[in-house]
Amino acid sequence: MIEHLLGLPQLASANGAQIDRLMAYIHVLMAVIFVGWLTLFLFMLVRFRRKRNPHASYTGVQSHASRYVEIAVAVAEAILLIGFSIPFWHWHADAFPPESQSVQVRVVAQQFAWNIHYPGPDGVFGKSDPKFVNEQSNPLGLDPNDPAGKDDITTVNQLHLPVDEPVIVHLSSKDVIHSFMLDEFRVKQDAIPGIYIPTHFTPTVTTAEMRRRTGNPEFQYEIACAQLCGLGHYRMRGYLTIDTRADFQKWLAEKESEKQKEQSGGFWN
Image (cartoon, rainbow, N blue to C red):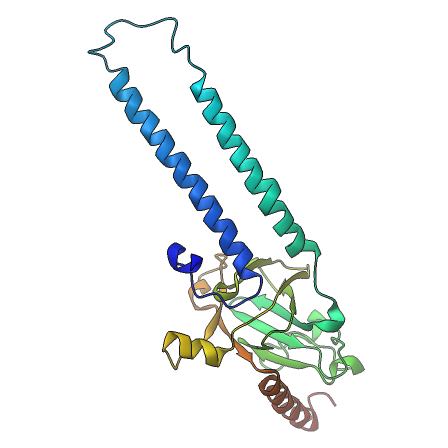
């Protein structure tokens, strides 16, 4: 309901409703302030027009009404900040779901693509080193000598996640500042070179279900870059597919099979 009133994309995450409500409260407050100050401005234009007040008054208005209005606005803003924004920020920044109960994935941005890294069946991310970076075969620079990385899965611009399960995304960048944005999931977090920044959300609508809702059989969730990052910024687009747990496991199995074929081809040997 709120997303329709605000013109937002359809909601597809468990945490998104809180963000939508907060934006709705802010819009209501801003609308009240706008109408109030506009009304006051028009009143002043009429009440203190030159024809009615040919001479300056050195005593001014004696009423304290404006002070009460200012106090009311300050109280409303304090309620938004203390009652909604700070608790939500605390939940988003500190109250992460347990890693053992979450799907974990690394997303490393670069001009102009999203590199996706899954830890593989052992649940451990392999080590990376810039000296191993090969933009064609190893864009993340995974260390071929690290046993933990031999089962890792990597993709470019293709992120798959299971529905109704907490997700922790570890963001970073290979070059400049990018911004990882998933509109339908109300996720937006900067990716900064040299720093891993985690963000979390829980998807609640599969890609297949969203296609039914929108009536668009070609619908895809997009990974957008919300930070101007260079001349190719406009084409930095990835895709997120929300699967059922069974379909997600099937996709992982397919990628593991492809990885084994790559290893037998000699990349890791």
